[in-house]
Amino acid sequence: MGRLARSRAWSALLLGARVLLGAVFPGCGLSEVETLAQEPGLSSTVVNPLQSTNSMTPNGLIMNGLIMNGLSTNGLIMNGLMTSGLSTATFKDWFNANPEGYSSMVMKYVVGCAVPSGQSRTWTNPLTNVSYTWNGVLGLTPDWASGLPATEREQQLLTACLAAHVNKYGLHVLISVQGLNAKDVPLPRETTELTTFSVLEGAFFGNLATGGAAYVCRGSNLNSKESSLRACGLVSQDAGVSMECPPLVHVGACASYCTLDSTKTYYTQCTYGGKTYTPLTTRLRPSDVYVCGDGVCQVSETCGGQQHYNNCRDCGSCQ
Image (cartoon, rainbow, N blue to C red; front, side):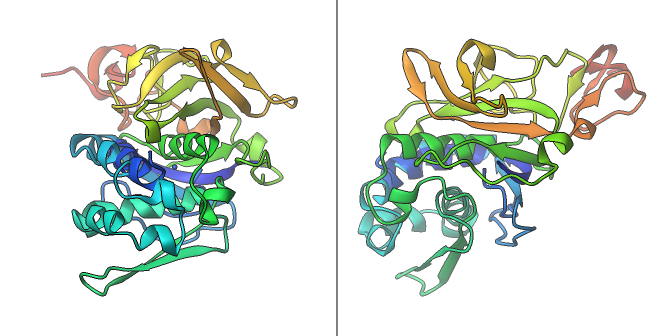
């Protein structure tokens, strides 16, 4: 089943992903790797075989245009996620544009999504002689991870993985990431995962590697009182570019666009705008869904006099 992951903010990762996907692919459920949200890099700590932290900040990647320029320009997509791809001049130039604050973070997410647990990718920066090691987690893209050019399905899964780890607030939230890898192999699942993570958050899909968008659809019928630290996936907005986590695009209910597997556990494909994508599905624990009206002002709620998560009386009146 899916891997469990803790999440933080990722809008920044999406942009970096787009850049890197363009470059890496030519054109991202990092469930076992602990990552940082607004911090400059991602920790490589393995929480446990099926857990990890996702913490890409939405605005970071977007504002600097790394997603748009990085993945499409660093050469990894065409050359594969092995020594041959990492040793190109285009990758070196991309990485050294912002090695510590951005590039290393993006690579940790990309490798975590693409490469299976137990494997890693190490690269020594020829300009600084500093070595970086990025650990694998999900193994979503077997061909690309073995050094082949990324297939279209692998590009889609990388996009879905990066988008699934976006989180507005940069705080840790455990999530369950489920779906299939590019070879139709289901992601592993813990025995009690479905019951523990009983809230079907939604699905993430798209293809940033080809200059397209990253989409999110709503899996649960949450009402306007409800919110969570996973604002990018749980939000009352049902259409258009996310107000909470741009550049993610909300498309509404997953039931309108996506098909569940036979066990009704995860979505196997989503069709939007005439294009069919391979998605990743995320689930939450009920305790991580907050309700305006419980008397507690949560970080995902704002001041006001009503019972709406962004106009919530729990946080007092706005002065």
